[in-house]
Image: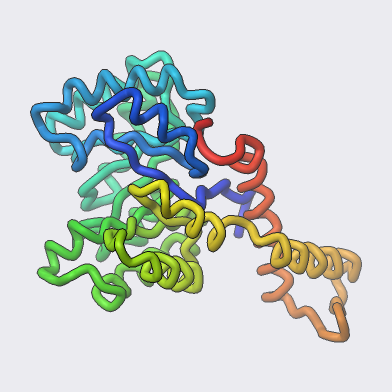
Length: 290
């Protein structure tokens, strides 16, 4: 890890911009980031009204830095209207999520459009096209965060959403995000009637190197947060290791009778920095927009 650690959300709750009351109510749930969706969950005829809901919700957000807005595909007129609404809004989200991205150039275009109005949100990208997977390194370098979009990707591949069918995309994302210090967020779980699937999947993606997971169902947040938010025991162990390495003044550190080599020292330092960054941004507000 080079430079300061990025504060990465461990849970992202998606809420469609169909009702202001529904969006505001969602902020009472314990998610690190609350996403207002203008894309798939909003029918085409309702998109103008959804933008008005989104703008009103942003104005009511107690902590807009932890609010995300998912816009429509950048190559559409709908996305242009989304961006105009966001740049005109007196309160802007901390994260803008792009959809159906095929190249890093789209991220640069979105950044320039937003910056031209003085807006500088983090840019997250939904990885849901074959082109995004094959060009994942450049996209991870250009973006602040990647979110697996399993539904569209599976539809393109002509397969069901299973662990096996999404494994290659997940591995590519984890490697690219690790290489560029980019947030790596897993797809939402679509099997709401099978809670065991959520727990197993969340544990597996953590083992791959993912940082967070999206959800459309508030009832899943407890499982996601418990699995992916900083674990006190793990963090304490990392602090002890980092402190032992620092005390060795460049020599070989010994902790509990074991030598701590450079890779383990780096892992400990990175763990402490990453979890402290999470706590500074998300822990102080109890998670999310509220």
